[in-house]
Structure formats: C-alpha cells, structure tokens
Length: 475
Picture 1 (cartoon, rainbow, N blue to C red):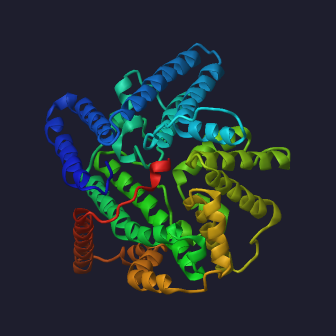
Picture 2: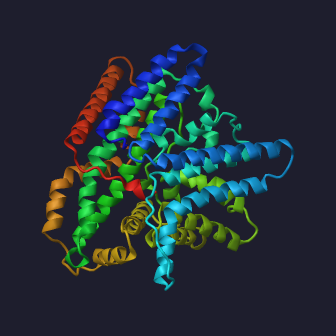
Picture 3: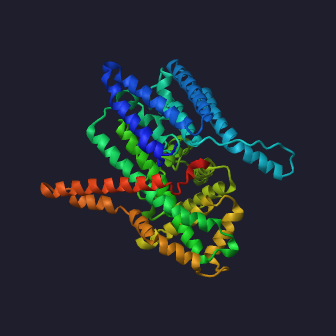
C-alpha cells in the first residue's frame, strides 16, 4: 500500500486517525496501550496489504531482535561483555537481508564465472533494508544505553513496523523515539503541523515526481543509438529532480504522519541541491541513512579521529562501500557508492573545489551529483555507460524532436521543481514571521487555501490513476 494510493489516502489513514483519537482515547489509563496496539495492528495490515507473506518475515525479524535486546540487556546488567550477543544480532539481521536481497545476485555472478549453480528466484520484500536497519538500531542502542530495553515485544514490534516509515524511511533510530512509545504527548499544534507536512509531501510525490518520472523513464528506455545529447541531459535532469521529490515527498509524509500520532522523527532532507560540496550534499541528503552509518559504522571504526591518514581513508571506503551495497544488488549501486568515496577522497585530501567561487562550487557539485544519478537509475552498467556517452557525445544529434516535445510539455513542472529545490518558502516564512493582526490572518488563510488546493490536485491525479512509480522497490 503506497501513501499516494487512493486506498491509503481515503480509507486507511482516516480510519487510523479516527480510531486513534476516537475509541482508543476514551479508555482512560488503557488509552496508550490501546493506541499502540491499534498502530501496531494497522502497521501490520498496511504491510500485509501488498505483501501478505512477507509480513511473516518482518515479524520473525521483530521477535529475533526482541530476544537479542533482552540478551544484551541481561549481559550488561551482569557486567559481562556484550560483544558476542551484538555480533550475533548484526549477523542475523545482515543474513536476513543477504538471503532476500543479495543471494540471487551473488549466485548469478558466480554462475557467470563458470560455476554450475542453481539461481533461485527470490522476491524482495518491500522496505527490508529500512526495517532491518531499524531492528539493528534497537539492539545497538540498548547496548549503548541510548534507549531502555523493552520487555513487551509489542512495543518493539511497533517501533520496527510503524507504518509511516516502514517501506521508504526515514530510518528512525531507536534512541529517537524510545521514550515516545509510552510517553508521547499529542497536541493540536503537532497534529495540524503534521497534516500540513503530509500534504506538502503528497504534492511533491504526485504532482512533481510522478510527472518527471515520465520524461526520465522515456529517456532511459531509449536505445543509446536513438538518444540525442539534449534528450539524455533532459532525462538525467528529470530523474535528478524526480528522485529528490519522490524520496523527500515520502519522508515529508512519514514525518507528518508521525506528528499526527505524537511521534517526532528527525529531518531526512534539507535542500540537498543547494550544496557546494559532495560532503555537504550528504549532510543534506537522506540524512537518516548518513547518520546511521556515521553512528554505527564510521564512528566505531574511529571516524576521522585516527592516528593515520590511511585509516581515515579506510573508514570512508567502508562506509561508502556499504552505502552502495545497501541500496541494491547491482554493480551500478556498488559503483555509485565508490563514486562518492572517490569524490569525498578528492575533497578531503586533495582540496577539490576548495577556494573556488561559491557559484562554481554549487554548479560543479550539482553536475557531479547529476552524473552519479545515472549509475543509480540505470539497471546495469551496459545501460549507464552508453547513457553517459550520449550525454557528452552527440552520436544521435545534439537535439531532436523528443527533447523538444518533452521540454515543451513539462516546462511548468520543471520550473516548479527547480524552484522548489531552493529554500524559497522558508525564506518567505522568515520574512513574514513578524506579521500580526490582519496580515497574519491573511497569510494563514493563503497557506490553508494553498494546502487545500494541493490536496485537491493531488487527489485528482490519484483518482485518475496517473503514472505512480515506486522507486524503493530495490531497497
């Protein structure tokens, strides 16, 4: 079930909110357990809607990590080392991901080397990378004393399976919401802010990302011999914008829904395309994944505070290798991760971009990020490399009718998408924050009208059944 589907928008979410603030709220001291149970049951139904069998995989992951959390806590209480329990916990979680996400790929590559192997067809559970990393976070945070161990398995299940962030993130570390499982406080301000955030995310996904996807998919679907340089760059730009609005839109919806139910997730995107370096870009893009690898991999390895430069380089290499692998079982994802390792190496140790004019730093960073998305979008290297070749070599011409047609038809969407990559709305909000009286009321009415219009337009796209791709099927 996708957030941008009619069944979710018009049935599932309204029923969850009605039950949460209706019958569950009237049960006195049992209201919080009832609300948590409702969210848990709803989350399992949400996941099982499209993946009825894979919900059992997630439930098995929940039970295993619940047991590991108790084991780690018991070892710490007795003053014993938790190394064995933590290592086994990480190994079991990574083993689950390997079987479902990477086993077929590894066996297929070994088969290409001449080994006679049977390659099974294993369907990938949606969001397995997200809920597995959250499950690992629970055990690791209990081990680091960053959150209380949960005696009740239903509370662990709620944390791991909570539907707003289940299949597309953000990755919520256990320490972020450990106390809110029992002690959250719902307010009208939080709920209304959550609704507004949800509507903004819905508009990003349905109005911008889905329309940009039509252009990107057409460009990447063309034969390299029929791909003009102009169409290649247009398709690349559209995918660069599509993945931002798709991913940040889902994150906005998740953060908004979390606030509707009293949970406060951390930000996942902070206008990444205004970055002036690749390092800054990854401080602004998919922040929850970056901080997960920082806290659980990079810092434990020593981070940048090591006594040898080669160790710092090693730590960066390990993080970016794992980042590429996390995104999917394909050589393109691996190469994409190593591409960012190389760029950060050049920035940190060779001074790439240092001292350049600010506009040059921004343009160069955007250029590098845009090239990186080609590897991310292409399913195989034999698609990515010819596409890159077409971007710089006009074998099929510099411009063609396809490029003219798609640019003309999608120019308003493109302009809106480009404008939305800059913090224009926060800038306007800061400039009008001092307004009072009638001016403030007029501002609130305009914002409400804009959000209502956004809902109506988004809903019309959803009802019409327009193109609605799901990028995270690889994750």
